[in-house]
Length: 97
Image (cartoon, rainbow, N blue to C red; front, side, top):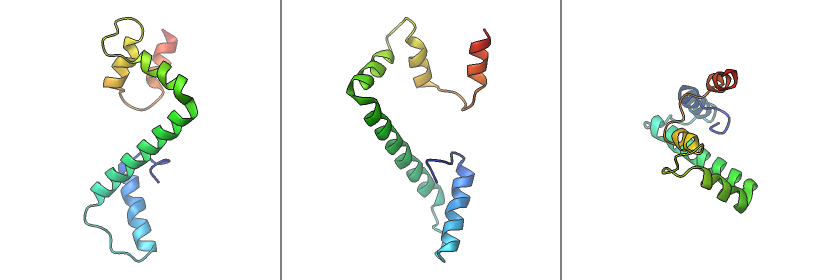
């Protein structure tokens, strides 16, 4: 579920549904299981993405993100520190300026 579902409450519910369907006692540490699954899914997504982009693409991305860069790449460094809420509103605000 983690690659397609981002809301933790829905992930917890999906885990409980799966346990019920398999007649398994739900684990006591659902939050830890959900967090571990999310982490594993994020790492797998990043690995697949880096694989597709290739070494040259990765180097170009990394060149845009140095923390000490003061020019236009500083935007990517700021996004790396605090990406903000997921959604299209920030993109819409930038494109209308």
